[in-house]
Amino acid sequence: MAPVGKQKKTVKETSTVHRPTSKASVGAKRGRDDGDGKPKKTVIHRPPDEKLTDEQIHEYYRQFFGSQGFIVPDYGGRLCGGVGPYSVTNNNKYRQKLVKDMIQKSLRIYNRKNKVNFEFDKLVSVNAGAVAGLMFYITFNARSGDDAPQTFYSKVWKTFNGYIKVQFCVIGSWYISGCWYISGIWYNSGLSCGICV
Image (cartoon, rainbow, N blue to C red; front, side, top):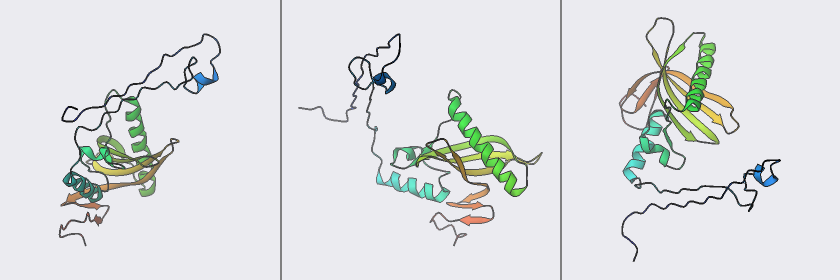
């Protein structure tokens, strides 16, 4: 009789790597062992600890569409095609540089288009979701001279081949009852806030 309760499945398949001292074989170039020709891989499958409830899924979509992707629950990345927080930690230099480059490109485009000179001040949050690459939803603060920092919202697409395209970069003002006021326009999240049509 099988044990009752959730079990974590772990599958681990590895093979010994033989590194020749002379010229590498074609198999080695394809990521295969020189000896047996089988792929070198380690696969570990661990199902999520818990299944998302219908309420969590509805809340995710309410927040995603209400904020255009800039505010989402932590579990958003667990949904197929979902957007979730993108961790930019001190020990991940690649992610830090990538986000910094996207912010700089967003500000260059915003400054050129609006004939202003904002400079990056502080990162607030980064969310990302997979779409033929990654779509980033970046919230950051920037200053123009000695003025108080402004909050910017930038949506940036990084394709599989590394191309970075800024979808938009705007200054955000208010978020009230699920509605955003961005650059003079109220965006309705589908909730009744009394301001949006």
